Structure formats: C-alpha cells, structure tokens
Image (cartoon, rainbow, N blue to C red; front, side, top):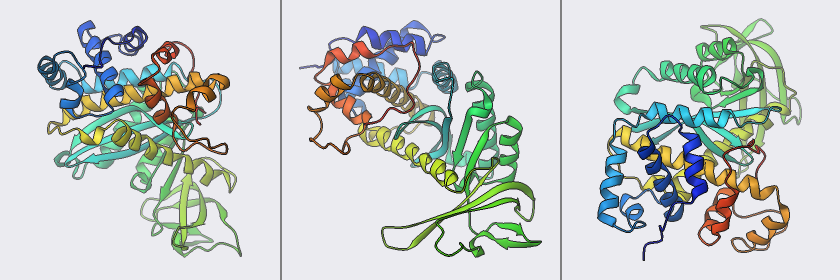
Length: 371
C-alpha cells in the first residue's frame, strides 16, 4: 500500500515560502519529494518512487526533476539560505561552519547553520573533482564572499561567526573574512610558523605552561611567507587512546583562552548535520553520476532537515507535549537523549500526522533547539 496519500498543506505552504521565485509546478515537486524523503528516509530513487500511487510515473517524475536544468542549483541554494537568514534571531551569534563533503568524484562545499547540537545546510555549491585541482582556494573565497554578501545580506556582520577546519587556514581567506567584517575561528596546522619574541617558530614547538589545557598566545604574526597579524591560541585534550590532541586556533577576535576552543568545538555539529543527511535521510544511498542532479537531491535533503528542525523547535517550546511524544521514540533516560532532534521528529512524523500543524513558515528559528 502506498503511504504517500497527499502532501501536508503546511509543508506545501512552507516550500512555497521557501522557493517563491521557482515555478509553481516545480515547487509542487519539491514539496512532494521532500515529504516522500521524510517518510522513506532514503535517497534511493526506487524507494522514493514506491511511496507514490504509481511507481513508474513517480520514477519518471523524479528523474525529470533531478535532470531539469531549469531548476538551478545555485538559485535553489541561495533561496534556502535567504529564507533562513530572514528567520534568524536578532541577537546572539549566527554560527556558520564551512566544510566539504565528498562522494566518489563529486565534491560539495557546504555552509552549515549550527542549531543546538545539529547542523542545517543553508548554502552549498557542487564541483567535480577535475574542477578542483589548483582552484580550491579560489572557490572557497568566492563561496564565502557570496555567503556573506548575498545569502546573509540582512544579518549584521559582526554577529556572524564562521568556523572552519585546517583546509581553510589560508592567509588570503582570512584577509577576505576580515574585509567582510565577520568573526572567524579557524584551526590551523601545527607546522605553520608564527613570530614569537622576535623568532619564527612552528606552532607545534610551543608548549603549555605546567598543566594548562588552554593557552592564549595573543596577537602574533602568522605564516612566515605571508605574515598576517591574528589572535592565536592553543587547546589540548586527551584522545580516547590517552594521547594529547592539540588544536591550534587563529581568529580575528580576542577571545578568552577557554572561549576559543569552546566556540570552535561547535563546528563539529556540522559533522552531525552531514551524518543526518547521509544516514538519517539516506543521502549516501543516492547513486547519481551527474553532479548537478546530485546537488538537486541534496537540496531535497537540506529542505527536509530544515523542516525537521523547525518542527523540533516548535515542540521544544512546549515541554509537556514534547515529553509525551518522546516516550514513543526513545528510552526513558532522564539525563540525556540517545536520539537527536532530527531523528526524533523523523520517527514521530511516521505516526503523528498532527505534528505537521507545527510547521510554520513564519517566526524565528530557535538556534538552541536540542534534546
């Protein structure tokens, strides 16, 4: 029996508000396919098609959607980002983690909004592996400039906090972020040299004092071949194997010694977002060779994650209802939840149709939504 009876009106309204400039028939396809994706939690095209009344017709519709050049990947990505930007709180940090996700020879650069302990993709660009050789730095700089100037245009720039891993620790990229007026925290490699007490030394030769876990080194000249003054700090923690793991962090803001690693640690929530996309919603099951079609499938996943987090935020605001509903999908742990907000809402939507009524396209996102 097909389980896809009809797309909830709230979801259709939400997608219409999300993609206002896209043709109506294409918006309908987005809404129907996002609904099917949330129900099946798989990006396998055959599984998605089986949720419709006619599997053969659904397969053809899905194929036309994925290979429709009129559905611009950049247009869709920018629309999602702008929609989210207009619904952000007016105070506190807007935390954005930037990273790459890879599938075979397809690469995607993704900006992830940190929401509680999860990450929601709000802007992305796909690339073939052949495009990236010698161009990754230029692509990253262009991506960040577009993210800040176009997608997050209405957000005050001194509220935007961008975190990135070692692959983005480039002096020219830091200079760009400084010109854009945003705050950044970037992890850098230990073999990079900084100027300490008049001498250029590798970061991994600097030591902690006694039993320190964090050490702020202050403003130093970073990178001997192209010096730039940045705030440098060090943080360490024992790994599961008992060894010390050290983060070397650079920023354009003078953070307290303990604050820098704490803020950077929230970047790892984007990895939770990738895991939600690939495992919970089955993006890893998408067997699509064309990079543009692959990115259109990712757009469905990104919208589905946004929908699940939005419903989760509405539930968290009503603790009594949340506690009652969560009894259905998790064990009775009191200290913490063994399921994320994304997983919990996805499970609940299979049996609780009334939850769709909590999906509102107006109002602000709760960036602290978590179980």
